[in-house]
Amino acid sequence: MKRIFSALLALCALLLPFSSPRAEAPETVEYRGGIVERGRWRAQTTRARLDELTVAYLDADTRYLVSGRPATFTVHAAGGDGNYSYVFNVFYRKGDTGSLSNIYRRERSVNPSLTYTPAHSSGQYMLLVAVHDEAGEYIGWQSQIFEVFPAEAADDAETVPGKVRQLAAECLRSAGRSEYSRALWLHDWLIYNANYDTSYTYYYANGVLLEGVGVCQSYALAYDLLLHEIGIESVYLSGTANGVSHAWNLVRLDGSWYHVDCTWDDPIGGGYEKHSYFGLTDEQMALDHSWARERGVMPECTSDELAGLRRNLMVGVSDEADFHAQLSRLVTEGTAYAALYLTGETTFSLKSAFQDWYSQNQHMSNLYGYYHARFSSRECEVYLNLGEAYPGTAVVQRAALRAHTLYLPIGERDVLDFVRLPEKATEGLQWTSDNESAVTVEDGVVRAVGSGSATIRLSFSGGSDECRVFVLTSDALSLPEGVRTLESEALAGCPNVQTVRLPRSLTAVESRAFAECEGLLFVFFASANAEIAPDAFEGCENLTIYAPAGGSVAAFARENGLRFAVSEP
Image 1 (cartoon, rainbow, N blue to C red):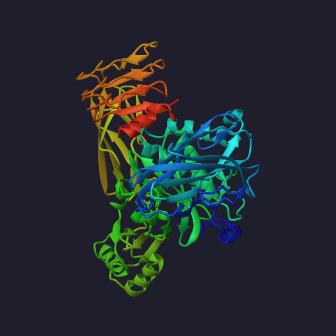
Image 2 (tube, rainbow, N blue to C red):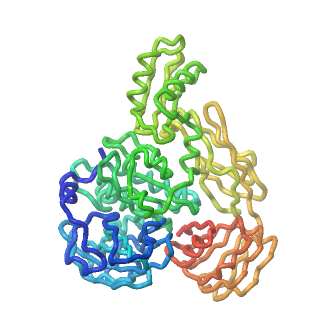
């Protein structure tokens, strides 16, 4: 069972909630993470609003702290009347065990952000945050742990900052352009390069990143660090899984939030890595995970786009009787490979249910047994022996592409993301391009080499899927270095502009600078920071903005619902 050290759980059970945010903060606290207190800080007769919070979480412009460098922490709160004030307390400890000491307090303010400069070059920081409303209600919680390092650590791959930088650069070179592709690449690096720490020694990011072992907290903190480094928003989330204390991540991909649990995709013992917990909705995750969702204090995960594609390749079952019926149907229809998953809120042991079904149906005329079976709490894969040669788990049985239309500037590359079952299968896949003078493909990597378009086909055992790739051959519009401002309506309404490259010197993009450029697909910012008017890209519905991670350009794209990707180094 993936869990945090039992002794730590026992200790946490004895801890009292931290002192009310209305009073002086405690001198020391134990790290627990997550929501820790909710209540009323003064007598009031007006109706409370914080019970109606729909989102409340803490974001930071960095996931690890650098000694002497300011870091900004921001509370994202929504719901109720919106009239909130905030209290911040900062705690520190020298190592990674023991109590954390209170070293800074900012009294109530309407400013949801705190900028703080750590003075230490090692150790761990944590924030105690409270949100108050005008009716007297408050909600308070601990942040995740933020480790602090000297600035030079980022250049040393033997440290957490250096390893994070190294992996982020490799991800940007190797994965596709989409946030999905990059988040999946980092997820896979973790589950294939680390193992669960059954000795319960490594709790922080150094475990899975540097030692190759860690508990769930180590996986979740490391994944959060890596995602932030490539500009993908995430939230470290603590709760329970099958009733045991657990940690995982919420990840925002292309504007929607999803659950990702790297730990549960990397079962103890290794060799059974999977993607069952990548990109799940609240409803799907709640089958075996629990968190403070009933308090409305985390972003909601409602999009089924990511898990939905994978589930489309499987058979959904609502209960045990339906599970038995679907297995019998597959055998009757001569389907040797069965991939099934649970739908809704009904839970039961798929392994036990399969064994019961097999004992009752093993004498079906065309059923000669089964070869390979993999079971988790929510899905299973079984090879049924229908009297034919063993198909082998290495052969792809089903597959589907995520994208069916792609635009690439000439000379650029991308990776076609796809889902396959079995997940580790490698045989039986074939990639072809019907116009190699325009687009080439090798192992899913497509390159725009000439004018025109091409249909890329992914063929597998029993089927195929296709993606149409259009090559953008018009020269990119590149503004010269030295330009500082792109003035209002400078390029508004230009019908033939597809790709624009902006110089590092650019500091401002004014109102409607690119408005109604319907053919605009890519804008590359050389700098991470620029002041951009809210309507600068009005009407550019197919636009993707590229820029270095962590700056105002990335923030602008997300705040205005535009697709964003981190530029490759």
